[in-house]
Image (cartoon, rainbow, N blue to C red):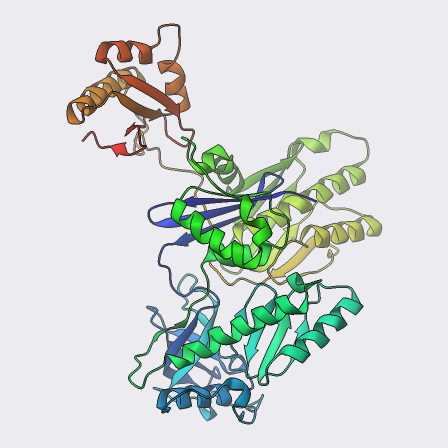
Length: 519
């Protein structure tokens, strides 16, 4: 089984998560601190405008642009949900539990939006797609609350089991088990992680999900203001842990102690046996540099991506779709048979394409132009290989066989903005002028800054972080420049190389890793 490592970099403004499989970067997530409108968040919104032509409504959930709610996303039990909310607002005393509540008839599946909603109406909605580009969030009123093993659907009675559980006996066991323990007026989706789980585990999780839903209504008051967050989804970090922790994790590395404790608390609840894999990173290098993530990000997010023996991908993004072109490069010069060469390159490309799709979180239509092959058997083999490579992708996707032009089409659900990383940067040393100050003067500049630091704070121990080339120069020789400075100023200076720094960048730190401002 392939190893998995989760690397978490906690910054001042955002938290970055890198998922590695066999040390290869396969997923990258960036989450702004105090971010709103995550997929799964449940809001109390106010209907702003009814659009009969679209059979949809625009709803104010607090975002700068109104969110979109289509009639088909209301859910059959919308009237029941709305009635339950109104009773919770107007109640005197305790709220009626959902399992004792009398449901309303289902809405007409072919009905019109203006038959159900009206402007100014308060609605309970869930974010199904985060704001992307100029569009506001996409909403649904058929609410689902996800746990690790189960997904709870209020005001439904249907029980379904994940199609990824292939054993029919296990499917039947789980379905029968859940039907016997679930309360009335609740539907449940059994997730893949529930395979092999005992009734006590599933029952405890089900009770917790029900409590989460009903306690939100218990806190509603008559003077409630809309829009506002009703039930928040977990952070991106805990969501990833919830969905992936059933798969083997070798380690979870994090560079922030507060977040470390939060992760440990969460894991102790869902998988106590894995609590010891969470570790605090205390190295001098930035955590992404230490684990080789920074280098992979720079190499993998460009327009051109190399993958095998000189072969490479060209990845283009348009408003309508994504295009991936497979090129053999120098590989075409080897071997004797063109068909064999084409097959080898195409098969090798499938793994990298699947990785790129996950990594960049591409959504919508993805068109792949493979190298032309004549054999129908080879085309079928390539199709099967692509499906296999995409198995670990948690997003819903559909893969079509190759066309006669050698084109493969993939559709993939997108619920968040696509991950983009600018790999071509404006030179921080010249600011785009094409000229920099002489590196010969840099050492003198660093020494001048050193004297300013020593005047500013009275200390004997300092850390200097610089580009690896500068670090090599400062530490070169038996009596290095660093050693001369130590003797001249009677200090203990440690020089550390930081690969992510540009050539002329440097920073001073005290012994506790606090940066010293020299301006």
